[in-house]
Image 1: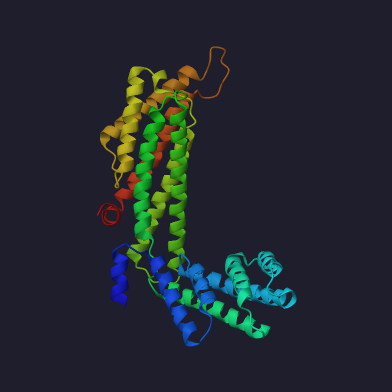
Image 2: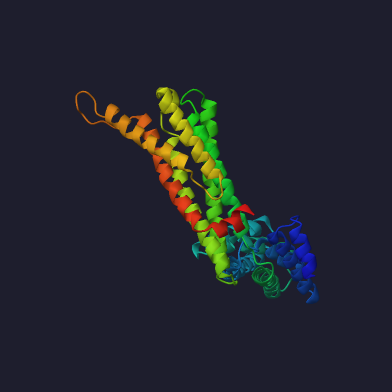
Length: 358
């Protein structure tokens, strides 16, 4: 059985969570069939209670059981008063949601509401027996899905995290090139495209941080090697640096400066530095050449030149930095972040070769 599961998982046709859902439903149905209990309630519960991590399953199972008990109790009470009417369904659903929310059982609201409404059509004459039966079958679904989620196919998000980091750095490189070379105000469509790409980048970054949180929670309950932990910590530092890069990209997209406003040799230098940045971002090892450092030094000189020539006006009143100076400043700030990443990668070359390049 385990070899069959591994074969399906390796084929990438079904994900781990999908497999665990199917196994939970199968085991739940077997148990209910063995004890001659209604299968539907237990199966529905098993489907909706599979979580991303074992930690979430354990935490939410402790919430879903009392929430389900509240839903079943309310359904029993309203059925006894109003019978199998539309009012019974409505009151059971509304009060289940309201009470669970009031008691801070929000993670159990869905299961509790399903339990309350689904048991109304099949009530038996003995209301207490119906209540205990439905609560029991719901509990079976919760327990089985929690056990399956904990022991079977423990999720490992590290490979997805590493791949996401590669994709994020590549996306950042493309976005940087588009922002710097775009003519501000020339095309609303281009501006919307850049803004959309930036939102996609930030959303992808948030999702990767969420996967990282899932992995941390998972390792609280399952063993991991020191090498796995070092690789994970390295990925988190790369993510932290990427967050700084995204911050600077966000600033750059609102700088109202065009390359055409610079002198030809200045524009050529900015384009050269930008192209160098994109290559560094795309490289998993983020290697920096001596030529790159030379170009950045020239850009630094250009920043101070622009600052001296354009910030202080003839009347000697200090004014805000012009957009062209801000553009150069943000590019220099990006270099500082990239240099930190390059140093980080230099000291973790073995992890890079294993997790990001191979």
